[in-house]
Amino acid sequence: MKSKNNEGNDTKRIHSKGLTLDLARPLVMGVVNCNQDSFFAGSRVSNMESVRVKLDQLVSEGADIIDIGGRSSRPGSEDISVEEEMDRVGDAISYMQRAYPDVWTSIDTTQSAVAAFAVNAGVRIVNDISSGDMDPLMLPTVAKLGVPYICMHMKGTPATMQENPVYGDVVVEVSTYLREKIAACKQYGIKEVIADPGFGFGKTIEHNYALLKNLSSVVSAEIPLLVGFSRKSMIYKLLGITADEALNGTTALNMAALMKGATILRVHDVKEARQVVRLFNEIQ
Image (cartoon, rainbow, N blue to C red; front, top):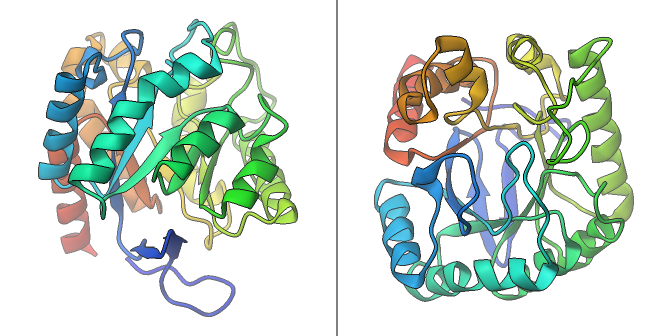
């Protein structure tokens, strides 16, 4: 599905390190968590062998982008040092550069030093769940690095975000926050910004579904929109199942999001998400 932007182009594209990624049709971002704390065990890797196996799997299943993170952002998770975070993601980044240099990678971090480390090692996108709120150097650092930036809405921090989140109007507040952050990114000189409403980050089940229902109005049409529902509690708690059983629900919400204008699906299960995108493209 093509989306027109304010400059008259009929496609969305992002650029990094001499390569261009076409966002005219939806893309799939596969998740690799280089820790033992993330909520879904299937995304975790803890040694070089498991890193290699997981990355090979995501590439073979057709991931357009692979999102590499060293710090868990599950509700109640604890912080780690910058040095430990770099150490955790280093092997995955190095392997991708050796084995799949043309496959786009992103670094999932809230720390500017980790972002700089990863981009200098070959990563092409910075994915920040805090939109710079947890590190005031993040936005100027990304601007200097010259790579696309994913800014996400989160109420509070990973340690506190699910402690009774309250909104007057969740759609209005998330939309206002993202629009202000996108403007700040542009002021710092970040040329390409992707917005993420932050499903599950400081939101109740009701908040999450209100956002999904109104997804097309969260940001302006020219801004690429990333969504991440994969196996989250907004699915498994509502259905009375576990995260391990939440793939079917994830697939359903991914299709709903695409129908409302989502550009990138961030998922643990790339094969199934690629199937959703193929079906969506056929409908279009």
